[in-house]
Length: 145
Image (cartoon, one colour):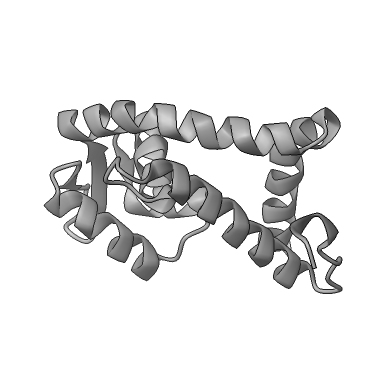
């Protein structure tokens, strides 16, 4: 079976996870040599967008549970790409993108743009335009359900 003829799956979860794995593999391939994986690039990009962010808000934005988010942020912290600061109480952690994190993100952005372009080239323009909106709607619906 060729990738062009992947069958539709009856389960929304299985379909979304398959798509997520395939897209992640594409982005990871392009990001090779940048020192970042797609998941790490996403975290850095989210912190660049949000500025300093409480861990809970970052988890909400990315639909990541606290344990997974902590496991993902700690290697970035050890690498000096993000910084953990205290929030209003000691249990709250606020994350900030460091100057080194901004530089790494900037160096990795061309690879990310290549991945975006490769995926965009394989999708009809109508599908690309709806992709972000549809996936955001699916994530919101799953949260409400």
